[in-house]
Image 1 (cartoon, rainbow, N blue to C red):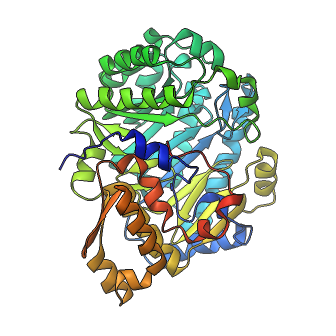
Image 2 (image 1 turned 135 degrees about the vertical axis):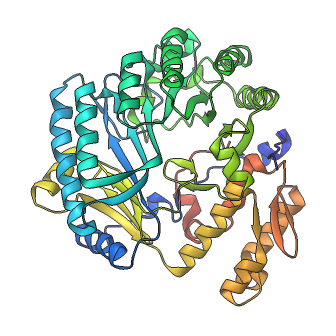
Length: 461
């Protein structure tokens, strides 16, 4: 059934508070150094000894960018020195060797994603080199989902053809906004023409899905200007579209200090931009997947949601989130057999760890049984907008509203406000509540309950 969404301005004003995005539960800011290299290596080995039931998912972080986009909060290194990437690829290969000491060679992989930074900072021969390194250690299954983040300013049609030959079949293209004044203010000058070249080449080379990223709330954006950007993007007919909220946190992300807060759209204008965007996407036939993701009805994400198989991980919504995920590269995050594992965020610390012969793990989290239960609940709500209670009750051996008595009271309050319906057998997020599903998920975050005022998150809208 197609997921509908209603933009309820009064409801959004009331509940637009800071909150996690729940690409994991517990969220990454909860990770501790109790999980280190030895614990991670042991967990990798244990996952094999137990007999893995599903293939692996690989995430590869390429941190380099040619230029700085002022809005960016990613872990990146701004450089034009191409020798840095050559050294980095050496260490990625060595990290894979360390991982396969525990996993063994030839583990099956059904999903891979290269993120950044800018993965296409790599030269064509370096892309081939890295893919060769990966294939030498892992078995990339036929028909898997292999995706890469693209900066179209640095990618030609020949580059896209190379990516296809190397096995990539999905891509995510950063756009953010096509308006020249907005681009100037965030230091990302990108033409429609160079973006179209990449999208056309992706289709010509058989890419199964092309996704684009937009951001609302950037400096100088207005209803009219962003409407034109959306019209241009929709004419390109992407398979998926992500519409991210710009969170201005200059004390946390230094590049944002170059953005003048006075140039940002007023809160009412920002909400109007969002409402307009949702309306345009709906009229164009896109299905609301959740939070800030939209897809064509025949896209695999929309189909997975219809079938109740949509999941969520560190790359966002996914059809393979049940896989163990192995993170490779600086700052990458993985999840193996109930353990979250994050690599060193500083590149020199990353190199030093590998030089010492151990996995470059900085921190992580070993999930408790309560964590796993709450993660399942949050996953169901955020992906399918509903939670079946009988299955949970059979698992825990008691009534849901007894085990989660405090949460049930909070849910009742959200139900009165119109965000959800409480039934004997289910929790259903309403059409009005779907834009605010993070608010519903936060009810079940036991860690957030303890220190919500001390945590820094972006607003849910």
